[in-house]
Image 1 (cartoon, rainbow, N blue to C red):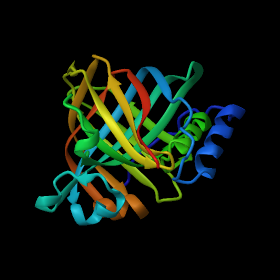
Image 2 (image 1 turned 90 degrees about the horizontal axis):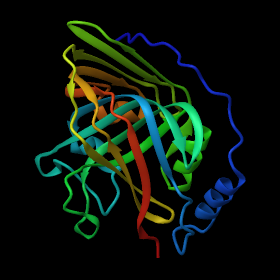
Image 3 (image 1 turned 90 degrees about the vertical axis):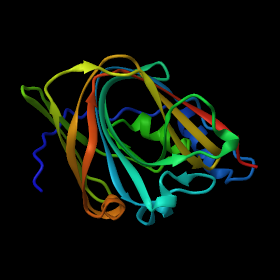
Length: 261
C-alpha cells in the first residue's frame, strides 16, 4: 500500500552530555550483575500529535519479543496486540529544551508479573524498540536498555471534515514501516491516563510511565504496513479496528523496578 508522507524538519545533531554517555557506558560495561543504575530519564512535552495503532496478531508471532517475567496479553487464546505509535512533540528532556522531537515506539501488550504489578489501571506494553530524531533521547533509551536508534520519523496530520487523516513513516535497520489512519472529524475530550512501557535492560527491569494530560482526540481506524521485524510481528500488514490521534501532552518518567543481581 502506498502511504504518502512528508519529511518533517530534522534538528541539527546536538552534542550529547558527557555525563549521559558515561552513565550509558557504565550500565552496559557492568553486564547484568551489579550493573550501575541508569541516569535520570524524564520528559515534559507540549503541542503533541500522537498517532497510535493497536494491531491484532498471533501470540506465536510476538512471543520471542517478550522476555520473562512478562506474559503476552491474550496468549492463552493464541492472540496478541501490537502497539505502534508515531509521536511529535515540543520536548524538554531532563530540563533541556530540545525543540520539536519526533519518535516512534513499537511494543506488545503484556501482563506484568505480580511482583511489580500495581492496582492503578494502566495499559502495559513491553517496548520492543524505539526510534527517533533526538540523539539525547536515544542515548537515554540505550542507557535504560531499550533497543533504539537515531533515525527520521516522518509524521503528517491533515485536519478536515467529515474525516481527518494522519500518517507516520520510519526507515530503520530493522525494516521500514508506516501507518495511515482515518479519524472521525468530531473532536471529543480524551481520557486522562497512563501508559506504562516496560523493558528488561542491563540494570534490571525498568518501567517508563507516560502520562497523558486531558486534551482532545480523534478516533477511527487505519492500516500499518511493515517489513523486517515489524512485518514478522504483524504478518506484513494489519488493519486496526481501534486507533486514535491524540492532542494530549505527555509526561514521561523512567524508573528502575527490579535491579539486576
